[in-house]
Image 1 (cartoon, rainbow over the protein chains, first blue to last red):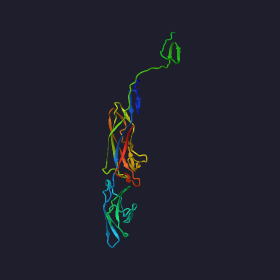
Image 2: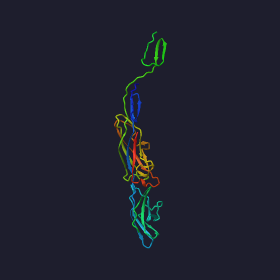
Image 3: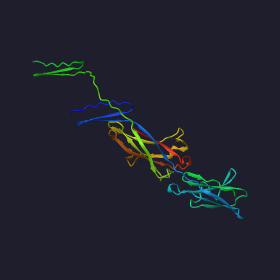
Length: 139
Length: 163
């Protein structure tokens, strides 16, 4: 058997691997290389057109909103509503981050509202994403 | 009886064994030195380009259902054969563990798949000189069950490394 001679001297950080066989020799090199790219993360849009209307004589306020499009065609989990007075917020419509209104809902009644001036804010929830609306006009 | 003589020039540091049985054989072992020239080759870094992403227009979303693929082309710019042993794709991370350029968004929010059921997405193996092949990785977003708003609407930088 005659072995072909293969000499490999590697420069840089590469590695030469040499194989010798009966029919000939195979030599190949390995080396590094890098590139960068980026992937985009989606967005949950906030509810819009939030309005609040006092229901005379009942102490209740009707809150209405327009829900966002389903992100990626996937249904959102629901909403929670807050009643705002200055910098203070309180749960409204018997909802909270842990107790959402159904995703199919686009209005609710905030019952037994204390006297005063308030705005309302609606937050959409999709898995671990939330999106908060702009406050309504005062009621 | 005449014993043939073998004389080896150079440095002889071996042992001579002589067997006499009608005829004579002489085995000489020796060490020596020589100089010569060899063909020189060198490894070239892989060229990775054509990096594009594909997937749902919505982008990544927490939990399954909205993965993105990172597609790339890798080229052996060398004249000789090179072996591609591995391709890694990783989210670029800041020192605090968040996605680079997106404070508050944990890098652990994202998972990278480079194979599926034993099939590598990278074109591993030998590349002939100047050969190009395509590969990809799949990136998903994990639902960490904590608020991930800091990850919304960002570009997640990824580093593709070939070796």
